Every structure is written in structure tokens, then in C-alpha cells.
Length: 313
Ligand SMILES: NC(=O)c1ccc[n+]([C@@H]2O[C@H](COP(=O)([O-])OP(=O)(O)OC[C@H]3O[C@@H](n4cnc5c(N)ncnc54)[C@H](OP(=O)(O)O)[C@@H]3O)[C@@H](O)[C@H]2O)c1
Image 1 (cartoon, protein in one colour):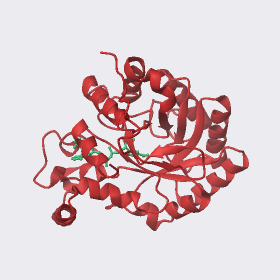
Image 2 (cartoon, helix red, strand yellow):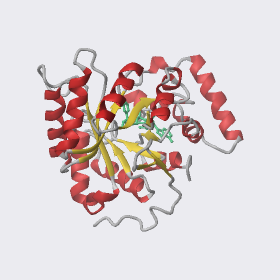
Image 3 (tube, helix red, strand yellow):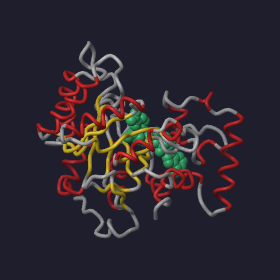
Image 4 (cartoon, helix red, strand yellow):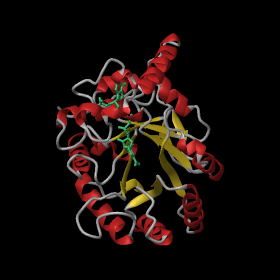
């Protein structure tokens, strides 16, 4: 059946924050494609989640070249979604992708060289069936490539028309300061910084990244805002078979210590006393931090996404 986006998608409660000192507004809740959108996942479920998101004003979809598994397949899922559902809405969507982690074998498929970033974006556009992305990120800081090379590649990507804006993810403070200055001098201001910030991991606050972004007019988007599901009710009564901890390698059972569980239970009780789920409370906490533009959630079902949207609606 042809998808017709909900006509009330912009008045169902989603709120939008200005991304730093730019013209771009991002939804307070954005959707990430790291898990649940690969070739191992049922396409119809991925499709349902994306439709639900867009129908509720989630206009920002975040990808990377190697999301899947298999690598590249989350971008292929987006390409299929563009063809099946989203093409008429392209100008209502803010789509990002990234390069920086291992993507293809050999010396040119990893880190931050101009060679890698340029080739990777071309591949991403082909997989996603797009002419351009709204935002292209350097996915991680590369200590061995001159920062000027990585940053000039970002500038040239914008000049080529293949991305409208650029961002960086997980760069350390001093390199971020350098990037902000370099890009600003070349009239390609850094739009946004993507970092892990949640109630269990406050590094961007402790290290001064969030303050720097705020001071410099750069947006900040928090990835893994629910600590991959820890900051939800998911693990309070054991490890469900269908959970990320049971299935994927990035969230290991040994992370679920007794101390952590008792902290999570305490936060869960406090949230319940306020009439909220733990997930809602965790997302609200991030959005209350000065300088945060959006929380970039993952979801393996529309039910989860619906619960997470309660932090704004
Ligand atoms: N820049 C980077 O280096 C980087 C790194 C990581 C992520 N990211 C971005 O950030 C996005 C989000 O990361 P993430 O997936 O780790 O985010 P997250 O929101 O912290 O975790 C999402 C996972 O938590 C569980 N979950 C979510 N809502 C739930 C709810 N209401 N109740 C119970 N369980 C719930 C689901 O896992 P189950 O499978 O257990 O259901 C879901 O897949 C990624 O897709 C990607 O776009 C970027």
C-alpha cells in the first residue's frame, strides 16, 4: 500500500531545537540506524519503525557507512525506504551518514583520509539512492591523519554538493576546537557534534565538549542516550532473549553488574514516582542539559519508539 505520511505529523507534539547557530531545526528526538535496520533485520519491521517516526515528526535519520550488519546494509534499507515510501518527503527529511570506522579492506577503507571519506560518501549515496545527504560526519578522530586533510575533505564535500552540512563525532576537545576554527574560516561551519551523553556516561560534560559546542554555536546530538537499552526497563528482570545484550556484541552481559542494576532500579523507582518510564526520564535528563539539540535513539519496535517519544509529547 502506498505510504501517505500522517497529515498531523507536525502537530502531534514533536518539538524542534535550533542546531547551534545555524538555520537548521532538528527534532528533539532523532532516529538512529545503527541496529535494527540491517540485512539481518526484517525489512517490514524497520519500515514500520521509520514510518512511525516520520508520522510523529521525527525528521532526522542518522546512518553511517558501516551500520548493519552487514556493513552498508542499513544504508541499503534506507535506499529501499526512499523508493518505497519516503521519496515524496525527501525535503522534509534530514539524513546524515558518516565515515571513519573500518568499512572495506585495505589501507583506504578506514580512519580519516581524504581518499577514504570521499570514496565512502560516494558509496553511501549509491546505497541510499540519494543525490546528497543533509549532513556528513567524520565518524571519529584519526590521530595519524593531519586534521587539515580530514577537515578540508569535509569542506570540499560540501562544495561538491554531496552534503549540505558537516559534523564530527567523538573528536577530543582540542581537535574539536581546531575543527570549529578551521571550518569556520572556510565558510563551512561545523553544524553539529555527535557524542555519547547519557545518565551513565557524562564524558562530553566532564571534558568540556558540550560547553564548547554551546559557546561556539555548534549543535550537539547525544548518541546511545539510553545506554543501548540499559536506561530502560529492558534489563531490570534479567536479559531477554530478543535484547541487544543477548544478541549483539556491543552490549555485554558483564556490564550489568549488581551496582549498576541497583542504580538502574533506583532511577526506575524515582521515574515511576514521577509517572514516567526510566527511558522517558533518561531522555528528559539529556534534553535538559544546556547545549543539547537532540537525542538520537535506537528502537527495535514502534512500541519502544512510542515510549521514548513521551519525553517530548
Ligand atoms: N557516533 C557514534 O560513534 C555512534 C555510536 C553509537 C550510536 N550512534 C548513533 O546513535 C543511535 C542510537 O544508538 P543506540 O541504538 O545505542 O541508542 P539507545 O537509544 O541508547 O539504545 C537503543 C536500544 O535500546 C533498546 N530500547 C530503546 N528504547 C527502549 C524502550 N523504550 N524500552 C526498552 N528498550 C528500549 C532497544 O534495544 P533492544 O534491541 O534490546 O530492543 C534499542 O535498540 C545509533 O542508531 C546511531 O545512529 C552513533
